[in-house]
Length: 160
Image 1 (cartoon, rainbow, N blue to C red):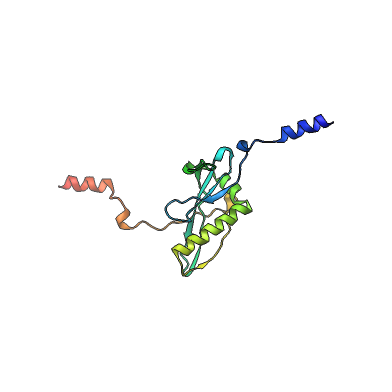
Image 2: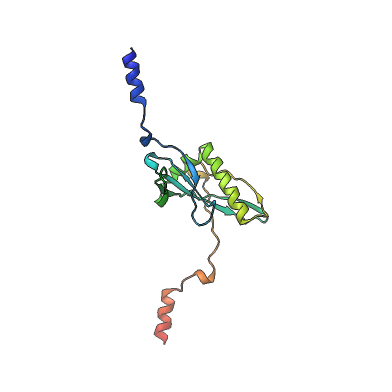
């Protein structure tokens, strides 16, 4: 009986390198507090959730959820980085965890404080499934950011 119990216990153990640590920590993109790394897979793989704020409503700052995170590499190492995309399913699984939502809230509040210090912080829960994702219309590009239409340039060159 003891041998059977020992075999069951040994078979039920999963090495640390084969299970997710669910560690989360700030991972800056362009400025402090604009990214959160979540180690959601074995060997330090996970998500790099990009954090954005919504200040369209005057006097308020709240999260703008981007449910398409980057893929995190080396999350358990000394130099984590991100590249490419992770799946939305992984995003939903991560934000369903209370500890991840707590870290997101902390980073987003700090990001709002730095971007809109006079605004009131307003927390909005992240989407937990595809039906809750709202397509955000991001601000329009300014004229200086737009490229000239190649056909227009060809027509102008032909007229010269």
